[in-house]
Length: 98
Image 1 (cartoon, rainbow, N blue to C red):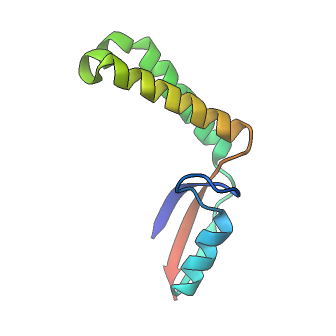
Image 2 (image 1 turned 90 degrees about the vertical axis):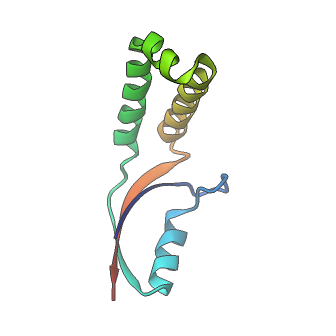
């Protein structure tokens, strides 16, 4: 099984440290492989989300409503900031049953 997820080494909502994901999976009987950090790639993804939504804002607002669009833009910007400041990280975990 492959899981792409956000991690954090400090308590934050439902985001947990990479080491806890690994230890829980190993206790459950999986061998675990972990990618290098994907955070810098995801910052680009979030920046592209923001750019594309902004470029097509009228269309997106027509589909989702102005309040939702503003909330999503703020959320994507805040997430990108957390990755840039290295407060959050992102990894791909591969779990193989033993």
